[in-house]
Length: 573
Ligand SMILES: O=c1[nH]cc([C@@H]2O[C@H](COP(=O)(O)OP(=O)(O)OP(=O)(O)O)[C@@H](O)[C@H]2O)c(=O)[nH]1
Image (cartoon, rainbow, N blue to C red; front, side, top):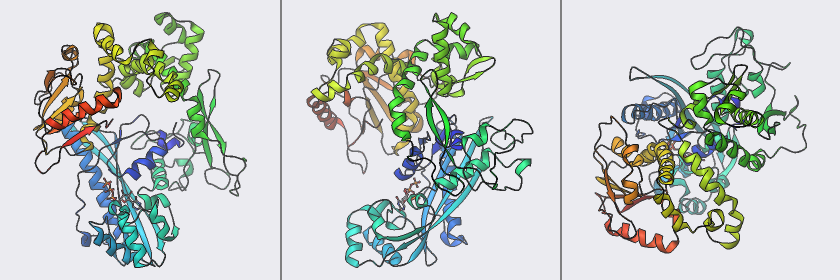
């Protein structure tokens, strides 16, 4: 669940973070935002002297980073994102802009400049809303920046060098990481701490509030949101007199308290009658900013405690193909769905309510219908359907995880307890029964297909000429790789039983270099030579001795490429 309703507006959108910064990823993940990471290839080489203020440079760089990703995804991957977020953090001191140091000497130069002084950290952020019209990319760009003042203590040369030798400065603007060892250098921070770390979350939420809920006629005096609105603020608004914004219809007047500001509330979780968590709001502070509740609710822990119920509700609804029914026939009443799928009315109604509170379905007086996400990911026929993997999670992973305690105590795999069979025998089962094989391949295909573009673009692989996707199953990742890197020759190596059944999963109408399928047993047979070896969802299946054998074989046939060491992209998803 996302704590902030404004971030909730992004839940059903395909959001892309155009940044390789692990800190930005962490900041946004921590607030429950779901997004893909596609690092920008934009080189940060804008002419600094052409900007009148340092923040203009940061904003323009953030914009260029996001634009590069939006354009690349639209043109190369033929999948236009809904929203692309780019950011750039710089340090400004004595009218100089400091970015990431190029080497230790550069880090020393930067840190000496900051020593004993106050400086500004600016993060520029660009939010691009994309639409594809007649195959043309249309974009609405919103940008902003945040400034935070930071003062360094007087630091000795010795301490500076010790810090530089820690390696921490190298990928950080200004040569320090305030969130880690660099925090020791800092005397004070005035402003948003996360802005220094790389992403001004608070300002970002306010900006989204402005975009998605612009001020209505009723509160035109409020030009900008200077607090982040709560769930109640929006959910209780009437639809009357709505004004449209670029991104959504604005609902009626916002709920303001007597001081004209939004009250501060947080969303936590409760259980409804079907035992599923729903949102409710808990006031955190009164008007004087005094906490009214003795202890904050441990929302993360509550979420973990109940997570299994939500998973199981999703699994059962998927198994009963409720999302398929609703995709074809929705909205439908519980009784009609129960009749169609052959289940009890009362049980079905509870399950449907659970799915509605989890945001998988919408419930209206006309009945239940799929959300956009359910149509895309949960119905079994969609291009990006996760149905196969959800069924695999229910039938295979769930029984295994039920025995986690024994696994931890014994330090062994639990297939015998979960299925009465050893892991190796289970693998054979996958391929002996046509039905089980199809289900397993569907599961692997659905998750690989959905994540393929992220994996393909997580690294710049353009220097490689050939790649082998070991255990690549239906070739979902391989097909994405040849789309992104048209000069890459990709081979999928998998068991003969798998290769014989891949035709059903091949993309139609794609004009890219073909993928080659080679069948064999990767433990017994020789592997093809390649510049790059990919092992995705492979190693976890095997004990250490077998992994050693496999990686030694890969190492023997993986050719070093131009200026590259041997590379294996392993277990990246
Ligand atoms: O205290 C801290 N200050 C800064 C950082 C990190 O520094 C970098 C800033 O670099 P940039 O904005 O160019 O972002 P990149 O990491 O190169 O990723 P992009 O792909 O977005 O260009 C940023 O990672 C901050 O998080 C820090 O960690 N602490």
